[in-house]
Amino acid sequence: MKYIIIIGCGKTGKNLALELSKENNVVVIDKSLRNLDSLGDDFNGKKIWADALDINTLEKAEAKGASAVYLLTGNDNINLVVGKVIKRKYGVKKVILQVDDAMKKKIFKEEGLTIVNRTYLIAEVLKKCI
Image (cartoon, rainbow, N blue to C red; front, side):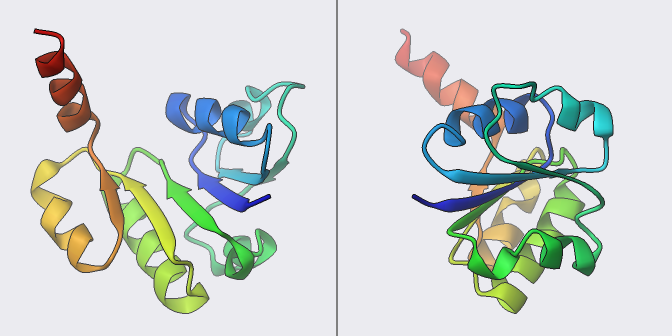
């Protein structure tokens, strides 16, 4: 069983948390209590209502012990900053960021972070439909 932290509980974060919590220990961090509540009773994990930019939040989430951290806040800059902290300070090997600005992709990759760009993924899937 893996220990996974998901930062950002919008549509993607919520769905990922619900799926991963079926077989893993999952912690979800979000600044919005409404987003955390949207996980419902089916969520079998821990919720932290806080700002991931606060180092105390990452300590509370026990980032040092995470197998993987997903950054899905919808803000590329927050994802990059928090991703770098998690990688450098806590030594988490798998740090996955959702990135909307394809131009930032190179910067993120240079930091050893795994990048997922929704627009690129959708385009690739659509091309395969032909």
